[in-house]
Image (cartoon, rainbow, N blue to C red; front, side, top):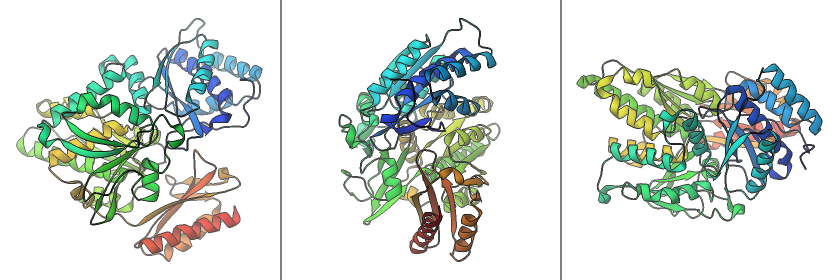
Length: 512
């Protein structure tokens, strides 16, 4: 059963991800590697079985490092080589080689925690993972159905008890307690939001969380059919809303009503509303801008009143997919620095760590806020409020549930409506398309993925089209999770933006 993978599957930011039918051997071997990683570090590591926003027939597995962050990038090729070995004996040889290279002592113990989302293939792949852990003689704990961010949180807490209680219940208590202290209110004035749960594990966990937040916020949950795996992410969820820019199924249009959508494993979120019949998207760029503006204002107010002893540096990290208007707003209106990194939260997370308050979000809604506790504690007078926000936000990884409560807390504190938030700046019309190619690995990028170095003729075609498009911007990058390339375009009008994206897609489809 676990002798030969049917095809090569790469390990990237999202870990392994492919059709679930091809993953049994890969996930079994992930158990072997996770045990080795735990022994090497002398810490507990995690493994999450999920394919996030992918369709129901897909699945995947990724390793979580001890502090709840993504697997160290230098290990990705090692994991890919071992898990894609053509025979079991070759896999064992590669493992022995790694144990020697890493100088892991004999008898070193290992411990792995793992969980899964609601996909039909999840229980089968969890058994494959457990088989690998048993063969590696590793201790382990199965946390069953959990969101990806919850497993990151649990992994961090086991290795760093000061971070919180390493249970789902502890996760609920930490977020709800901070939210309650930041936004005290009566039940008559509590925030109200419609939440599209993508028929995934986010529905399971928000339903479990209800007793903790019933007096704090009114959540109207829709698309909660998590017992029907075939409905996962179908015409709903964050990726569907972001890509199609219209309401998901089962969310009824209601003037200026704040709504949001999680993705299948609840690590990303987008907000939206309908104003005068128009769909208004509040994606990751809008969330980053809201948070940046709030903490910038918080710092200015605290400096003015003398409550902040010295400034805390605030910075925002984005990718090439960030709308140009959001970048301009943060730089020109908020006067905050903006860094651009390659796509993948591991890259954004790393850069955000250099700031006292580092805010990072991909446009798809995956992101969080990092608080440097040392710099915050230097400002003794006003560190209590910032520490509460540090409790509210899951700083290990992007987390749809904690980001939901972060946005509600900011909106209430600023006393602004969702439409006020939407109108802070106006997005440039944009379009994200994808097209299948014979070999996505041909497409190589530079400048934080904003330009192609190969194929050269594609970049030349993009430059030509952009020159003839008012406020035009376009870039192409290979998907890390699908056999496609993605084309992103911006322009002064939606018509010219759509035309720009379509022409680039057509050129690629005709030649590659």
